Image (cartoon, rainbow, N blue to C red; front, side):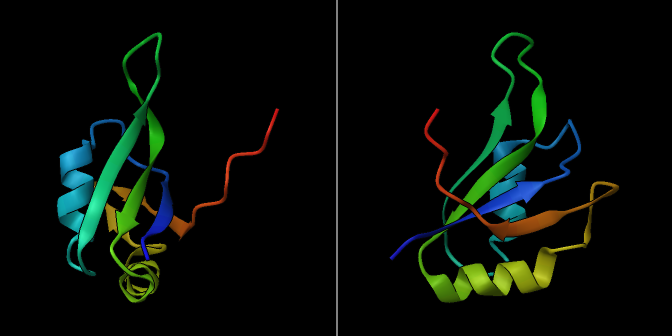
Length: 85
C-alpha cells in the first residue's frame, strides 16, 4: 500500500523531479510533487512524496527529517488527510 509523506521547508528552487530523485535513496518513489502557488507560479516551500510501501516511507522519515537539502533543514512526516472546510 502506498504511503504519502509531507516534506516541508523546501528551498524555493527545488523541483518535483529533484524531490523524487533525492527521496528515491530511501526506496521506490511512486510520485513526488512540489506545491506551487496558483497566482505566482512559485513554490510554496513544501511538497509530498509518495512511496510504494510503508517501510520505504518510514526509512525516508528516518533518513531525511532534519537533514540539509539545498541549504534548508527538511521537515518530513506522514501526510495527513486534508481537513474538510
